[in-house]
Image (cartoon, rainbow, N blue to C red; front, side, top):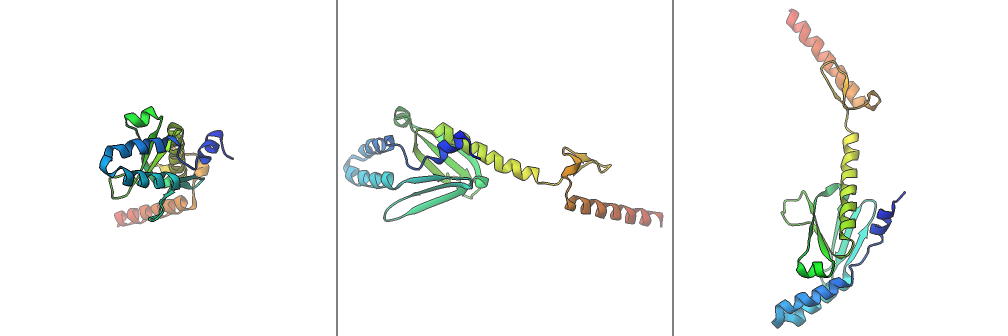
Length: 180
């Protein structure tokens, strides 16, 4: 079952045409090397593909040096939106996705999206959904009397019951040693 937001995000597979306009403007900054950068940006734009699915995000680009990055939603740690003056004028932004890797740089940068806020909100909801599911699967915490704290009694697992038995056995051994 997919929502309308998921359908919109899953339909995104290429950057917006405004990204090529941005690349042309950016290549003018390097006036002596403009033809080289324009060619580089042209191939980057025309080979860039995104794929959003239930598991994660995939981005690929390049002709001679093909690059592909795939991230699962569980690995996402932080999401940043950045845009300069020209990108704002073209209604574009870069979505920088960070993971818990050793590098401080973004693991993946999605660029050329008009729907950047929709994608950011979608990624946050997926990221939280993965973490919320993992938290629900953890065993219940117990207070000193052995009553469940913060979760219903039917959420007990076999592991929690085995740990309670071990704790009771250790308590009985301790009491037996104290009597001697």
